[in-house]
Image 1 (cartoon, rainbow, N blue to C red):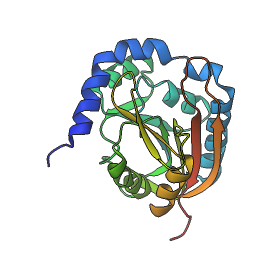
Image 2: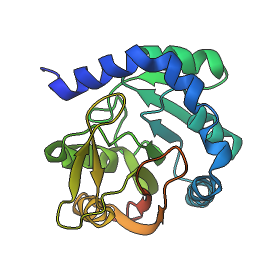
Image 3: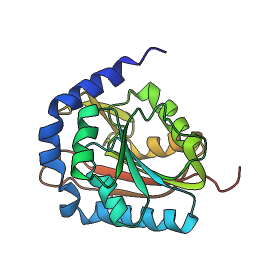
Image 4: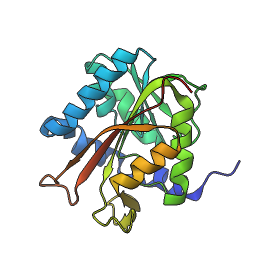
Length: 216
């Protein structure tokens, strides 16, 4: 099966900047109490559901995977970039990190109690995002939770706005549109956070928490 071109482009781009990226963002959560609060709520809900391990999809250098682990979750990371996976394994040798694509995960149906997708959907072309969300639904166990973060579009009439991301072409999304696409994939919105940009951010940041129904 031929790999979509955007996956090859994204992998190559992140391989190129992996070391610099890891140095810059390894402490990103330390200065973001609102982001940490959403992760803490996500972890508590996953614990309560007791539905299985958590995959950090698009884990990069692994700092968010490690944060989930510190919250008591059985967490592992998956990333397109082999260089990112190498960095994550060196930084957190006690954790599991696998090379792979979130559009075709090497996991059985219903294997996960939770998914973290922290800025990993932003390089996905708009027409491909339903495929990604369908894969999230497939691997989540009934009652499992998804936490997805992305740069927010400020134009409701244009739900996916391309922008000049420093690594590779990316898209900002309307939170309402992401919630709609998740709903179409069978993942119901539970909560959302929309915050203003920090000093080193250009756009508002959105985080959506969604859940796969406990029964079909």
